[in-house]
Amino acid sequence: MVKENRMTYTITDMSPEQFGAWVLPIVKGTLFESRERLAKLIAEGAECTALETEFREYFEGYCGLAFSLENDEEALLSILDTCDTFAPLRHRVAVVESKRKTSELGRELRRMGVRPYADPAPAIKVATLTDADFRHLMETFVNWPIFAARARVVKLLAERPSVAGASPLRTAFLAFFVCYLELEQFLEDYDYDGDDDLELRPEVDAELDCSIAEVEAGTPELIPIEEVAKKLGLKF
Picture: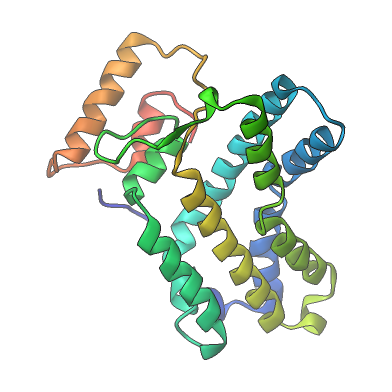
């Protein structure tokens, strides 16, 4: 699938102030608010039904983070190749890529609540987990390293960018970005859709199935996924 309007600017060319302004909304997403609520529920020993409700918000927050990063992913990955300091992060990215079972298109469709046909089905269905296993999974998500990495970024953003300098903030954000990639790869083993209990109009479902089939069949004339979502009245 051909993507349009890919990022053409270079993040490393941004001034410290520009980079900080670009980063701020990314690390202020709803995922981080949901994580705090989920952590509180776990600490209080809340019932699994309450955890399930909050995990839906957590997953939606993850999808929002993914949407905010996907157009810049190639540029961020390219920065990791510019300096030997980033060698440990490059290694972690290589591990993620070696474990991936899904396609880029499949990951995008899944965030839209669509299960792609070409990608392998996730091995673990969240809805069938025992209460103990589900609670353990929630603890894993709450303690994912992305939240510690995000705290470092937020701390640097609170300083004056011209004083903190661009390099520490960029380094911290790249670590945050790699943690996101690791979370994305971990999630692909889990069959979960927060909208499973919501109905999709039959005509929309049929048109969406047709669009996905055309993409996976390699139809020459394709439209961006954003336009498909808009046409079908889906949030993107």
